[in-house]
Image (cartoon, rainbow, N blue to C red):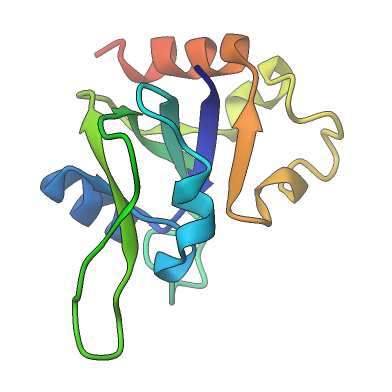
Length: 138
């Protein structure tokens, strides 16, 4: 079992939670193909909407991969994203800034956003558990 953070706008996260799906990197297969059934997954949203200039910087959803393989859907003739089914937990969004010092995967606290730039990162279980505890409190 592995633990992951995916970076997606909060607006897109909300749609995914509503549909019980996970999608990354504008629908590319590579990111979702790295995930395995039962892996823990957290979404981090730097913005509420992709087009926003204002920053959100929150963990916005948490769940566990519920299928064995990625699958592709046709949203439109020119957009056929790859997805995974995921069982989302009821959570409260969690701002990242107050907990930066507690996250071991962020080694440079000055440039803490750097690990998120690729859109998907594996994190240690202890960081996943810490974030999950805080998100699931309410």
